[in-house]
Image 1 (cartoon, helix red, strand yellow):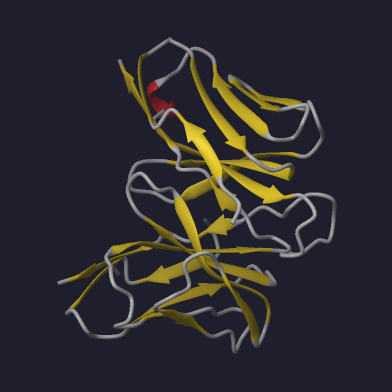
Image 2 (image 1 turned 60 degrees about the vertical axis):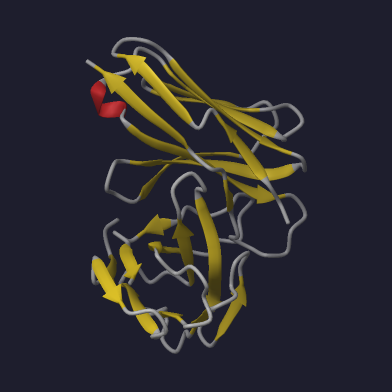
Amino acid sequence: DGGITQSPKYLFRKEGQNVTLSCEQNLNHDAMYWYRQDPGQGLRLIYYSQIVNDFQKGDIAEGYSVSREKKESFPLTVTSAQKNPTAFYLCASSIISGGGGTDTQYFGPGTRLTVL
Amino acid sequence: GQQVMQIPQYQHVQEGEDFTTYCNSSTTLSNIQWYKQRPGGHPVFLIQLVKSGEVKKQKRLTFQFGEAKKNSSLHITATQTTDVGTYFCAAANAGGTSYGKLTFGQGTILTVHP
């Protein structure tokens, strides 16, 4: 919400094609995250990045790839190796305060990907 | 990996009734956050609980963190139609090195009938 953009809102692709989802933030946040949301399964972490040029796999990274060449941008590529790519994809960002808690994550509006 | 169970999956209430969703972890948590997602929208942060036994209130919403830091609850008093949406808990594992990494519960979908 506020400062995180994802485009497009809806995306259709043919099976076997790679597709890249964009995520841009102007909040000057260090950390960025990609989640996948399926009905009844909540949000599952795909990849996350705490600093430019570095990222870590989340719980369901297989079939996905990311890059973090700029602080503001964290694109996600859904490859043809992802067996069930149709889902709602959410990007989020947060500061890294180093305090006792875990910093709030701010979510973008999401991209709904449908693979035909 | 860390698992966070959230119940119930669905809850239908009449406007004015109370609502509670529960979140449970098998491991001790560093902290827990709660998010709300309106239909067709994206998750929005509600609150974070850090201390054992902590209770926080936001108007009609009451959040609790268990004494053992393994469970949490969100209670809404006298629901309104504006409370409709999916409520998620999100947990950070105690002792973890993956800063900022949250594990989300499956969510509770709340519908409120006027």
